[in-house]
Length: 84
Image (cartoon, rainbow, N blue to C red; front, top):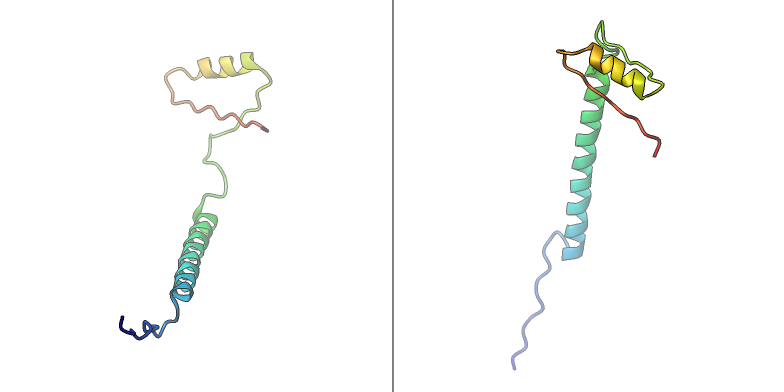
């Protein structure tokens, strides 16, 4: 057997250090993208609903059915918020 010299370590350090910096860089870029998107949505989103758009508090299925049938021929959107 011949004695081989140990493998040269690159200037960036051992592979674990390079991997750590790559991960930190990736997370920093992800955080920057998130902050930019959240800031853009915060500053450029409408502050209130357009005129004529209201949210109705319904107290039963009969209320929902009456409102749904009253808007026949128009686009309708039903949003259900559940605490669970």
